[in-house]
Length: 407
Ligand code: ASP
Ligand code: MG
Image 1: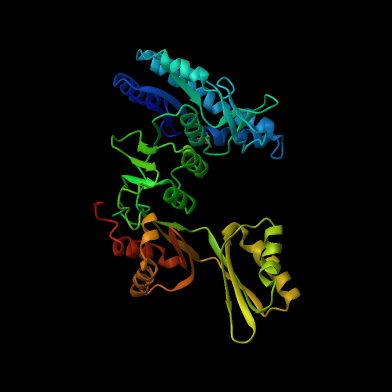
Image 2: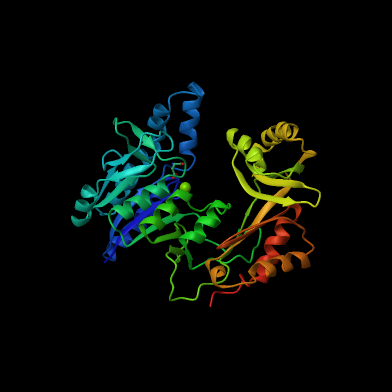
C-alpha cells in the first residue's frame, strides 16, 4: 500500500464526463488499497475566463482581488470531483487552499508555498477518505487568498507530496509522458520511461512545457518521485527521479528547442576591461533577460559581442544596444529574429567526451550552419536559422539513436 498524490490538470477536469472519468481512476487506485490525495486544476479555459473578467474591470487592479477571482475555478472542480467520488461510493472531502491550510508568502499571482499543515490530509487518509485539494492556491499571512502563478497546480501537488512524504506524485495530463523531443517535429519521438530532475528542468525550460518548471525544482529539492502520465490512455508514463549511479545513464535523453529567441550583435567594440558589463548592464536595467552570450576577440583590438533575448524583448534590446554602441564607439548593432535554439540534454554527457563534436558533425552533414554555441555539464545548445529547426531536430534525433527503444 502506497500513499500517492495525484494531480489532474485542466483538460482532465474539462467537463462533467471527464471529472467522472477521473473519479473512476481514483476509485480504482483506492480499490487497490492505496491512500490517495487528489489535487486538481480548474476546468480548462476557466482561469483564463476569470482573469479576463477581472481585467475587463481594471487591468491594473489589485492583485489581491485578481487572486480572489482566479482561485474560484479550482473551488468548483474540487467540489465536483468530491461529488463524483461520493457517487461511486468513495468517501471524499474537498478542500480549498485555506482549508488545508496551505500557507504562502504574499506575492499575489506568483506566491510561493511556505508551509503545509498536513494534519487534516493525513487524518483523512487514515480514515479512508480521499482529500480533494484545490491546486494553484494558498493563503498568505493576512488571510488573503494567493495564487501560485499560472500552471501552479503542479507545484501544489508536489508540495503536498513532499509534506506528506508520499511515495509518488502523479501528474495526470493530456500527454502520456515526456518525449525525446516534440512529436509534432519528429514523429519518431519516443516516450521516456525515466528521466532525471535535472534533465527535465533543461527540457522544460527549453520549451517542452509538460510541467510547471517550479514544480520540478521543488520535486528535485525534496526528492519527490514525479510521474507524468495521461488521464485518457493507460500506461506507465515517465518517471522523473534522481540520477541513479548504479544505472548506466543514456547519453542523451532528449532534444529541446526554443523558437522564442532573437539575436543581438554589437560589432567593433573596443576590447577593454568592463565592456561586457557596459553592454549587459543597461540590458539588465531594462529588465531584459539575456540567455546565451558570446564574445569573441578580433585581431584588431576590437571585439564582437552577441547575445540572445526573448523575441518579445528584441526591439527594446536593439534600442538599448544602439545607445550603448554610441557611448562605447562601437561600429554597429545588428540582429536577427529568424533564429532558434536547439539543445541536446543528457546527464550521460558528464562521463562522455565527444558529444559536442558529434553534434556539430551531424549538423554540418545536414548543411546546417551554427551561429552560436553554449554548453553546460548536461546540455549543449546551438543557435541556428529558424528554417532549419525541423531538419536539425530530426538529424540529431537520429544521430543520437533516440528513436530506438532504451536498452
Ligand atoms: N488553473 C490554473 C491555471 O490555469 C492552475 C493550473 O491549472 O495549474 O493556470
Ligand atoms: Mg497545467
